[in-house]
Length: 197
Image 1 (tube, rainbow, N blue to C red):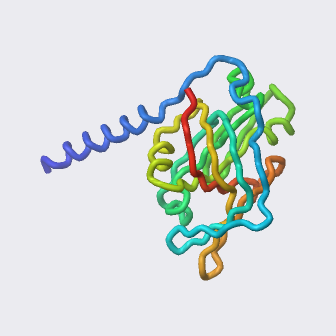
Image 2: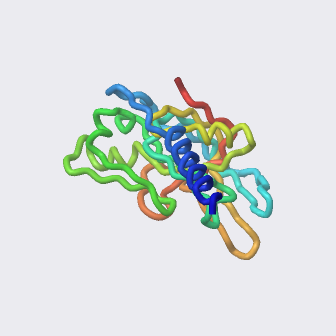
């Protein structure tokens, strides 16, 4: 029975450390990431392997964006491939003055937003933000991903990919920033992830 208080203290301490490591970064008003993602579609994509999953590259992508939200996954079927989703914004969706009027959340591999008064037009919100399922290419990217916090700017380079596994399981990427709803998220094989000061 004496072990129970020790375990409780350790769990509380671990939770507090996780919360502190992922605390929000406060940014001053102003557009922080002015440019939309740069994408080059590939006619003949390469096939990469991740354990029993094949990844087909569909496009090269490079972007600098503000982290609007992050959600970590450990228990869903896709977590072994993509442990974290980042909701990212650019253009006016990287401006604290705009974001103050938008509630943003993530759940179940989706990114949600809502607003009572439109700080910018709806279509601009849809085209200037995206939920990206991050596949770290190596341990270095995985370590950098663990340090990413809401509010930071990140620079990402990699590939949009479709994922397949024997037996019929598949997970496809979006190839445009203009779509919404199911299937609109990007599945990104990240070769480089830097937190921008």
